[in-house]
Amino acid sequence: MSVLVAPRIRTEQRVAEVGWFSALCGEDLEYLGVPDVKLTSTFEHCSAIFKKTEQLGYQSILMPSAYAVGQEPLVFAGAMAVAAPKLQQLVALRMGEIHPPMLARHIATLDHMLKGKLTVNIISSELPGETISPADRYTRSEEVLQILRQAWTQDHIDFDGQFYKIKLATTKPVTPYQKGGPLLYFGGISEPAREACAKYCDVFLMWPETEEKLGETMADMSERAARQGRVIDFGLRIHVIVRETEEEARAFARRMISRLDDATTAKIRSNINDFKYEGTKRQDALRAASKDDYIEELVWSGIGRVRAGCGSALVGDPDQIVEKLNRYLDMGMRSFIFSGYPHLQECDLFAKYVLPRLKTAHLPALQGRVGNHLPTTPLTLPLLQEA
Image 1 (cartoon, rainbow, N blue to C red):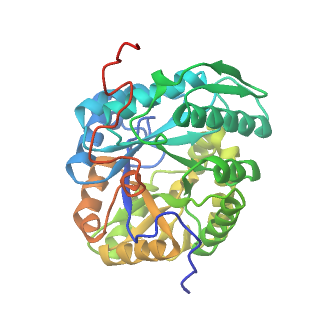
Image 2: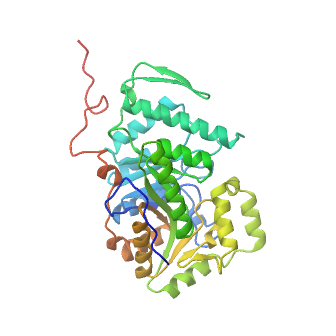
Image 3: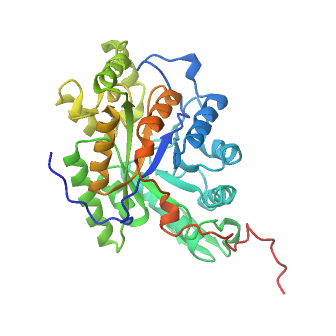
């Protein structure tokens, strides 16, 4: 494989922000397609994954959002800010669920609880029970992002849009801990998704594809951001199966799908709305053209048979996985969100075999969002009576 030329990126240092996945929405398991009562998304199990991630030295953890059995991410994040305060949180939030000024307030409060160890994953999907066009979904998201920007960078909010018309004389109640607010992570490959990210977000998160396709997407997004006078970073959300040998890793991948049959696969896919989105369809197409579900060396797409969204895993021995991640770093990726099944087991194995071999960092700290002193905001100091 040839080395792809890196696009222009915000974080020039060759470092990796390494995160894990918190499995809040009922998707921890041992065999694909087989629910496991020991691994359901109870508060206790999700907390255990969270605390393990902190203990093992990962930089961050992603909390997904879905109308599903399990933990609601924003509420759960508040609890974990107390239980595991050293870990940076990447909280997925659906745009439109919460009135934007109150969303800004929720985020600012959590940002202060975490002393700046907060990032936000922007979700633009339909809300539960809602039917709305893709164009309107992204219009709504862009409006929320504009209101958040006003809330975090000026002393008032004055917005007149299609979905929101908001005037507020003060933004003191929503002043974040981080300068300019938390970094915003964004995923989606449709035209409106790419434009929204280029305008307002900081890290473009991609799902697994071939290096060639990932490189094309990164080049496109870098150009779109430049047209907005901006520079963004890039991240990858991917599963991982790492074992002492490649043979062991591949055997575990085969074991994961050993209880799947066509009827189970069809039933699962028919019950999950997210299979209709363009990003998942692109991954399905790559898998359809693959050999034994490997869309390229080390990238196994078998998980995507029954999982919408991120549907592939890196599969190999420690040297192979590290080499692949170094290729991604050379391409310009700076943030990685891994997961594996079962989550506690794979979290341990990745931390044992791979994590110590990566130069890691927190992107908000590198980009000056947090400093070494307490910021002066209405939420960090007592409000003084105005003269």
